[in-house]
Image (cartoon, rainbow, N blue to C red; front, top):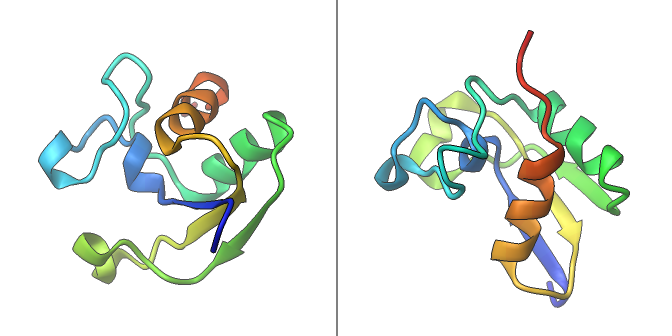
Length: 90
């Protein structure tokens, strides 16, 4: 899994606290982020990714899925890039 990073929708969910799995600052987070929202943001950012059915260990019961993104830089840089293009829910 070298040069790949795993992203879960909960990383971008403003309704969650950091200790509950949110990884981005509240200013970049969105409410109710779904896997479809995350996929749209990854496409918009021009990133190569694949979707898997696995869920975040702390939220296994939600069955959100996850994205595995081809990325060689830091995960923090990836999170900020994706959060920057993540569209708010309508």
